[in-house]
Image (cartoon, rainbow, N blue to C red; front, side):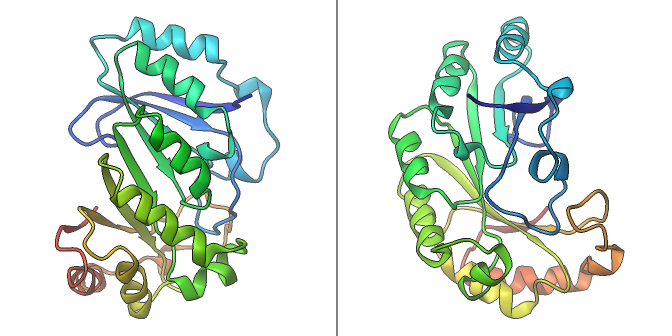
Amino acid sequence: MIQIGGLEKSSLLDYPNKVSAIIFTYGCNLRCPYCHNPELVIEAFDERREVTEKYLLSFLKARVGKLDAVVITGGEPLIYDDLDKLIEKIKELGYLVKLDTNGFLPDRLEKIIKTNLLDYIAMDVKFPKSQYIKISKGRNATSKIPKSIKLIMESGIDYEFRTTYVKGIHDMESVEGITKMIEGAKKYYIQNFRPGKTINPGLTQENSFSDKELKQIKKIAKKYVKNTQIR
């Protein structure tokens, strides 16, 4: 059963050119130090903050005609093998659906792509291959991540790849390694780390890149993905 840890009722930023609601699922298979949702990842599930499926669907029914889309993010939504059932109910209300994923569950990603329920996929490509196992502690990362990238690029569904760059974790070599994996992709977004509530509270403004450095990151990335933007 999907545990929904939060609901943002309106956003102009999370689905391209659409007004969306954002569903935050609880739980994740990674522990990225710069994650801004520690309450969804490392803290125990708080039933007092839970959004029930009944409430969610009731809210979405009431917002038909005012919202265009629903974004499902986390945590990592694909840890729930029945995610497609919730998406199907949302689609029945006429909404576009965007899925955010970290790419660590390619088999479940493939299953949900095959349902034809998704309208947009955003995948975080967090590190170069060489760093994935060391930093993410994810098993078989070097095979899972490329598989998810390939699935998305060949899906026929609109998509984007993105990376949050954190000084001290990423450097200019990281950019080369990351963007080589997504060579020829439609869209790639560079996101600068912003300090705040994170899994590792020791991260500060010093872990953010300067504007000049971000432009250098973009220059490297554009060798592999022409449509690269700083967001």
